[in-house]
Image (cartoon, rainbow, N blue to C red; front, side, top):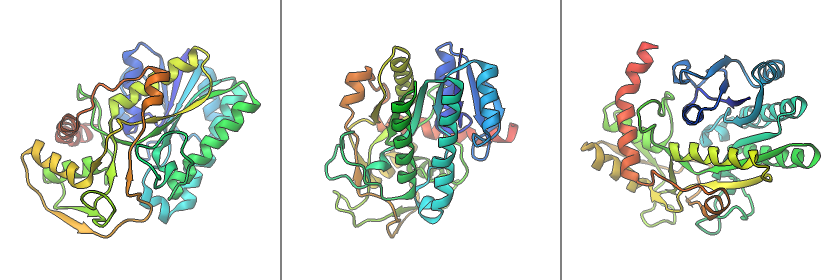
Length: 330
């Protein structure tokens, strides 16, 4: 019995692999290494290099390794990029997910956890936003994830198949033991970009939009530590293994920070000042989005352990200082 992690060589996927291995699970990873790294897959997990679009490969992997659950991370995640390349996002995030779901049904894997996103909400009318809010995505990224949620729900009605979709808010930080972190070149995650700038890896960073209807005019987001997010997946897996019904849960802390507040935290924790350029808004960015997290806390028993912005930043900085050496050694 093993768990298949798609995209397990990427940022969140690699942390999920660590969490599973730490719990004594057998893990197999499928990743095409387009944005992930071979060295990011922890020893103890089996890496299969390939694309989830290769259904023959997926089915063979499931059968050879006795996969009983799938945790699906593989996909594209950059909102502005999705606006510029919508068809690419519908291919990577929707079409390929459809093929993976079909593989699960055909091989009898009836436990499926999906990496969804708060972007399905668009610009919510109320914050914190609950899972009951009507989805209104503002970008092809959000739409592509919502389409997969719909496919999962329809599949669960038609087959012996149950799923949990976790709607992530802004994922940040690194493994507290320093084993993994955000390593993608030219990443757009705010905390990573700010950490790179603080360490001199970038000459400056940009703030996109200072005229939003927020306290300081910049976007407000809910930042969740990547380890707490991995633990949410473990809670979802336990739920499905106990026969729990299909459901959707927000993953966030129910508090928001503005872009200016995050940059101030990085400057404070790093002890470095750095250049910040004010730029126009980017398409597809909502003004503010914060998670209502009562549902996942009450129904799955999840509780955060790393809800501290300064600690999140400190771990991201520590990882940023060592990631180049890891890449060079690989």
